[in-house]
Image (cartoon, rainbow, N blue to C red; front, top):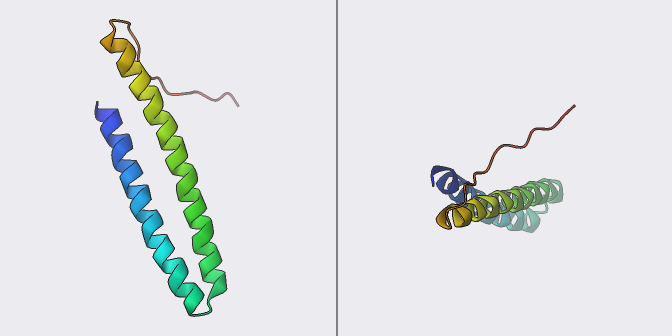
Length: 83
């Protein structure tokens, strides 16, 4: 459950970051600082992508917990990428 709590905490942080970025984008747009608004928009896209990744990880952990609850030995292991 520790990993699941960590993932949920990261999702909450990313969502709070998105809310802050939305406010910054609105402020910069009103002040005519479009380059900064565009940069914050890209930051927001990165946060959204990160949330999608975290939701995928969360799904894997929940699936493993479901199988463990049924008595099937399961755990999520880190993915190794070969270079």
